[in-house]
Image 1 (tube, one colour):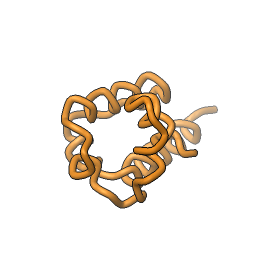
Image 2 (cartoon, helix red, strand yellow):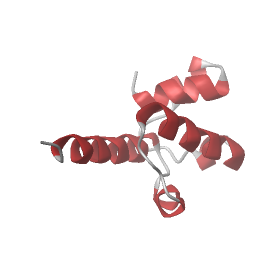
Image 3 (cartoon, helix red, strand yellow):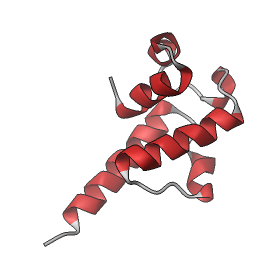
Image 4 (spheres, helix red, strand yellow):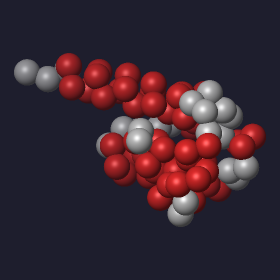
Length: 82
């Protein structure tokens, strides 16, 4: 299960919601409300250490968007060392 799907399970308290969504389904249109989207962003930041700005939030609509965003930031963060 992807990081975002795991966080959605934690957020909703059920695996059914995260399991039934395709990677390209708009989260806001799938029944999750704006408060839950903010909580999702906070969970992502807490668990991954990746900051999500208000501008970023406007572009993050699907599980795929979040996963790609995290992958890009994780690779960028890990390649900038030594």
